[in-house]
Length: 125
Image (cartoon, rainbow, N blue to C red; front, side):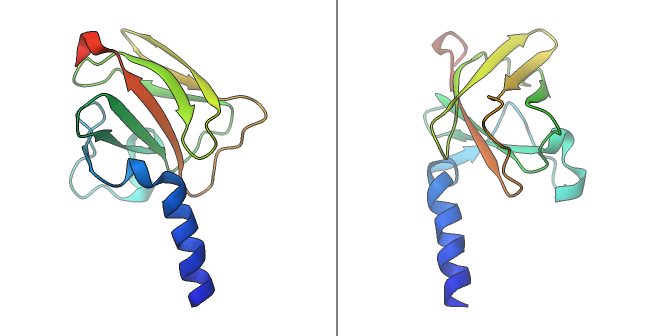
């Protein structure tokens, strides 16, 4: 049991900033009663208290290097994305149809939770 709790603590520490002192996302809202298997786009999202950072928790990862998301509900523009656990950059492109997040071919989506940290453009806060 102790080993399991230590392992769990390690997972939480790696993405802690996206779990602590955050609010539910207004860009990607999870409806009440949504289960892990029925997540839209395989993600849930949180945002920093000051609304300058959006965290995308990829719980059901795509099969390739690209994650496609619909346009944010609140009209935000995102810039400068990174994988939270290792600091590696991801490419973010956004248009009226949605947001595309592309990771490097050398990075791997975690089967538990890959968290993408996206800065919010100050023009849309």
